[in-house]
Length: 172
Image 1 (cartoon, rainbow, N blue to C red):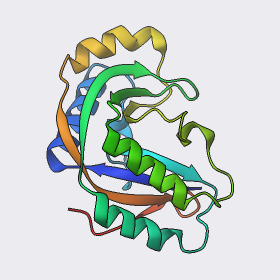
Image 2 (spheres, helix red, strand yellow):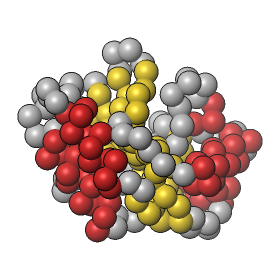
Image 3 (cartoon, rainbow, N blue to C red):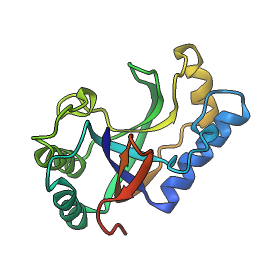
């Protein structure tokens, strides 16, 4: 599996990590407990089995031209599937256009993961995985009502086979 992810500005990254820490301190599931070196706040735009030829170069050019993009955090939610607890991101026209452009590059990629496809994608920053919906109210109280605004400033791709991540573009 290969992903296309946007990385947070230092300020937004710190805000998400602080929320992770508050969840962990209260005994709730939290990504603060994930010690893998690639674990960091990010917004996933796409996931496919593998990149088609030339995709990395095209994505690099795309991100060098399009980033940074503003991100406004919205409410806390529990998504379907593996039940992640997330901070939803309000989908701005710029973010939606970038998402669509990424999928234009990946149109020939085998194995697109359907929850990231245009029309189905829910932009978010993950706070915890395998979260019980019954704990959502408690999590909202712990995280608070903050609705931070920040930027998504760089892009990377995670490679599930090697469990490594590499940059896509220069970033800011």
